[in-house]
Image 1 (spheres, rainbow, N blue to C red):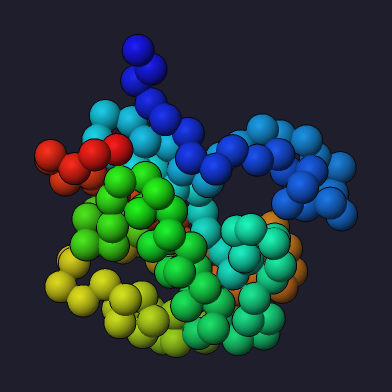
Image 2: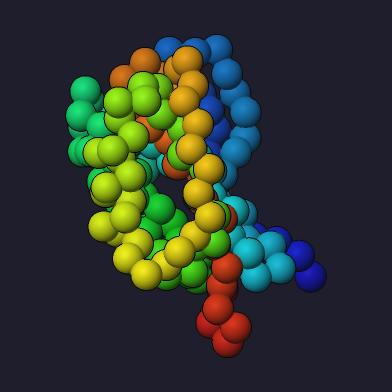
Length: 141
């Protein structure tokens, strides 16, 4: 009996065709009632197209769309997020990004860690959000 489930497995050669990588990863892992999401960026999960180029708020909306979709596929939802780590490429993006996250998670009260980094995996990405959530007891996963 497996102790975890992988959601949306992929290979980095498909996500980053411009790079010489071939790592087997997944978008989420569910283990012992906890959902661990891969850092989400403004990229369409199906087409791998970048979204909201140059616009941190638009990118934050796409990030949260991805988070919501993946949590649903994992048996959880936004209301059950317990931790977010937010990576920004520019401190000036903090206000528009945090505003979007706050609008999408009213009353949730997760712990947040915000970091400003030199760059993300692609130069067009301005924000990345790493989420951990729980699956409520009695919910199917």
